Length: 483
Ligand code: ADP
Image 1 (cartoon, rainbow, N blue to C red):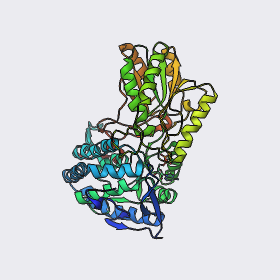
Image 2 (cartoon, rainbow, N blue to C red):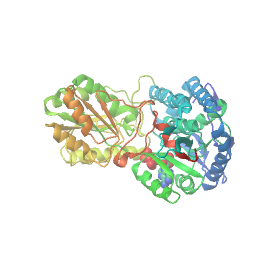
Image 3 (tube, helix red, strand yellow):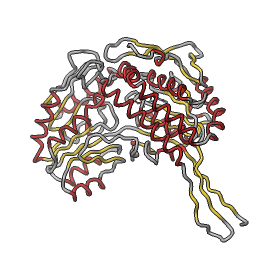
Image 4 (cartoon, rainbow, N blue to C red):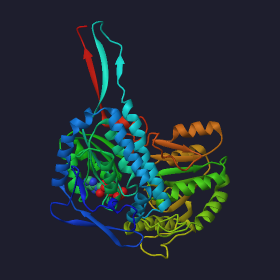
């Protein structure tokens, strides 16, 4: 990995403004999923280092919260600018540890940075309220205050954006933070910390601890100083963390798993739906929680859609994400490949047919061919469980009611997509889908200006948008009497 600025590649944790090793001296390897090569090591930290980071955050809190919002905003804005100035290096670090194509990594750097820009602006708009009094000699005022020390636990699929999406609003609101990145992708998080420090984020306001998930998460969730946990990851771990936070009654934000339906109605523009399905399903090799997991196509356009999708998918270039033209990189690890194979074997054993791809790629390792399967039904594993890989299952349906029932038949409720033109249907279906997000006639919905989040077991809270700041605020009601 040849960086323009090699100082962005750090192999130590960042606690209270200092680059440090684990107390034990132990490290964990970071590997490149495209080559299997070990590209770096990072400290294997645990509860003690996390506690120090939390205590440092608590010490940094009074000065950070009392700084004028305009001044915090200027620091966040500078951090945003530094991310863009260093976009090529950040993208290369990300592709090297995560595997996604370089163009996607650059897209994520811009997307990740946008949360810092947005919340730098929102920092100045943490407005309160004045409520008309209920008694003549009283006045009621509501103010918003930063909740306190916050902790983040983030996944490997968006190594930068999942951190800035939390750090932007937390820091904007006046909260310090301690973040634990996924062990597969700590280097992007550490590079972000380098830039945060350069931007003027004071020591202790943002620490990064790498290492043991259980030990770090255990300290974050049990330490009474921490007032808020923001987690992005699996529903399974999210439930564990919610339980752990119960003892100290912490506020939690949870961005958990999805099982996104992608519905194509007869009145859709089929070519546009095929394009949308490609970006929605195969971005990051299918490893996003908003990727289409179930593609429902109405009878009248099913055959045309299936044929066109399979033809496009067969042309996708697979390879190391740093190579030109590659649109699908390796999966994060072999466990991810196993899951795709398990879902595929289950589907084909119950009658589904492979119409494109269908096996490990000849490059070996965790490369897997983008795959389309037809004749998929609700009794197959893919209908219940998120594949998190490049497998596009096509279900056939006849009626609107039938597809809404199938789409909602899941404990998840994050993103949903549909393609249609009839205006009545557009309203009916948008309202009927039990999801936190509904995208119509497009396959990409993430943006910093809109509220991202799920319902049901997909999570709690929203990230981005004007609502994102509230997640890091407490509301205080002040009653003035004797007037
Ligand atoms: P994924 O399947 O996307 O890897 P996980 O929920 O397993 O999702 O991981 C998301 C994040 O949660 C990662 O940073 C991981 O290290 C962390 N994590 C995993 N297990 C625990 C745990 N028991 N306590 C705290 N964090 C955990």
